[in-house]
Image 1 (cartoon, rainbow, N blue to C red):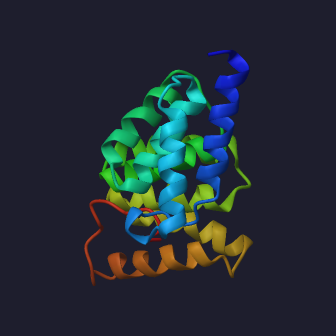
Image 2 (image 1 turned 30 degrees about the vertical axis):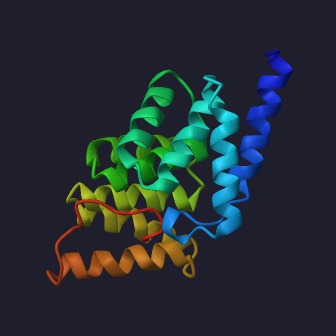
Amino acid sequence: MSASAVSEDVQRAWEALTSISSTTHENLGFFERRRLKKAEQLLAAHDDPLAQWGRAKIALIRGEFADALETLSTLIDAGQTGLELLQDAVSAALAAGNADRAEQFARAAVEGYPDDDNARCGYALALIIANAPKRAMGVITNVCKKDPDHIRARRVIEILRKIINGDTQPPSHIQPGEY
């Protein structure tokens, strides 16, 4: 298969993946499931980093968090970068309950993209599962100071208040879309 055919398959797979709005397999509609299957078929024959990342996104959607985390970790450890890649890695690590990797990837996202409020939210979530709620509150408070109406930050603050007040224990993992 020629290089142009490879990139065309991978490009078509990514078009299918980006058209899927749900973050969990259970919430996929008929057409989203079809697009997910099509993306999987298109990526199967390719092993370049973009194809590997696509397969990791599919694993995330399917709830195969350990597999997604392993693939994304390998890509990042090999020098692949980018905010969306790091955010996917944070999501996989949070869902797999791997606080160390979640914090590592989230910190890298915040350092590389300091103006991205969603990266800061991911960092706060990583600190929550690492049982560092006071540090998480410091991170998320800065997001709320910048944008008091940031919806994701507001949800994170609510869970942090419950944890800090002793009303609930920090979760051991956080599923995609949960906060």
